[in-house]
Length: 294
Ligand SMILES: [Zn+2]
Image 1 (cartoon, protein in one colour):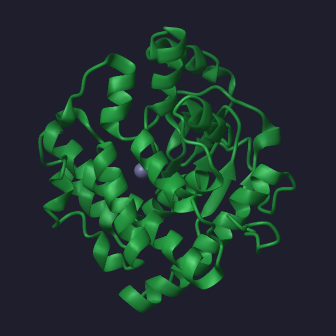
Image 2 (cartoon, rainbow, N blue to C red):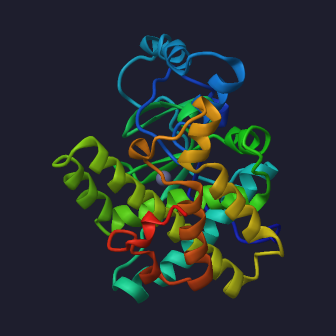
């Protein structure tokens, strides 16, 4: 990506200096169980053991106030700056698209950079669950070491692969602003676990498609994209497909337990966004195509 020298976002909270705190898993972000699975796969450790070890020190954190809170600003290091440029570009894209498509203003989310574990309005979370969006505080939480895991453990390197991860979380923010997240949560409380998982897959695939919509506009309007970038993103989407992760962790595939979608589904919907740049193309809820596991 041609990102250096591009505008950066002010909506970044850099909490990496605050250091890790005690943590336990609270909901799954993009790639969900990627890190827990990857760690347990490569070390042979039970993932629950890893999470329990982390939660053991949680009691040492006093009170419910956020001890890590820092003022927003722009980071100084390369990785942080890159995340900041990508966030700024998503802001620009969504500030144009949301009023144009849905006649409503876009409210910028915040990006919290952290190391190890983090407090949010969604609880205390270990980076083992991967990057995530918390709808209660409109913030995206990202431990940048996820990107080296993605590159080394999952074979999905590249700056656009990283940008796709951030843009996917921004996609969840858009779903939150549009009331889609709330509708899905309400529905999920009324159906079986398997049906709930299927709804979760449609949500995640839409966030992939929204990430693609951003990529489309970053390319067309600001020329941020270089040859090979989109392929990196599609490769990453395939690498974090539920079937791929399940094969990696226990050697077989259970579609009814999927929450994010297969490699094929994720690349299909990311590509749809990248190709069209149109939010209407991202209606994963009424589409039957989401079933396309050929
Ligand atoms: Zn997601």
